[in-house]
Image 1: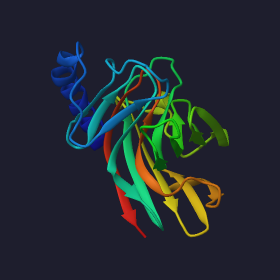
Image 2: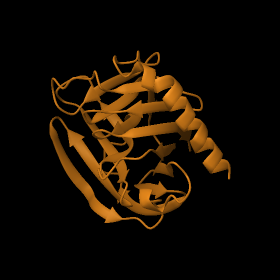
Image 3: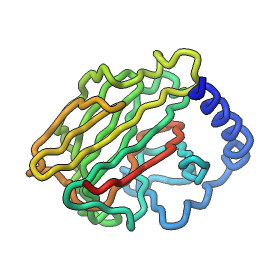
Amino acid sequence: MKRIVFAAALLAAIHGNVAAQQASRTTLPEGYKVRADEAGASLDSVLFETMPPGWHVTTGPAVIVYDPSRAAAGAYRIVSQSFLFDPGRRNEAYGVFIGGKNLEGAAQSYTYFVIRRSGEFSVRRRAGTATSALIDWTAGPAILKYDDKGEAHTAKNVLAIEVGADAVRFLVNDREVASLPRAGLDAEGIVGLRVNHSLNLHISSLEIVKS
């Protein structure tokens, strides 16, 4: 019941607050930056604003959103709770990234962990303009598919990355879905969000916890 009430409140907030601002891009919360995947892509259709608890984001192009002051090193855990609004039939990905470096330059790099409406996850690495799949799209039974959300208006999922001395664990809704050796991953650097094309999300949290 709490989940349904929360989602309904989010819908009301969206219609009352976000819709009125579609004509122009909202000013980003202090300290935050947005970068599109494609160089030169217009960010006019990207909305990222504070909406307690957390933030609301809608996208046109695929983007990363981050605060350069939020970085992590050593052993740590990041956790993000998200609510996916109706994506139509689009099966676009969203999630979190770690190890961000040079995010405003040509040599950007980071590791990202994303899910999509159909209940699959992937772990990928970006280096410059190239992306590579460390774990390609794989069904994750722990992921709440959008079509399985029941009476709720949104699909709620909690993504976590646990970075240890030797391994990095990837979890959805407190269940491990994959693990990779830390060596070879971008694991130290800026932490942020990744949201692909034309999605509508509420991100209620993005926490960094030192181990």
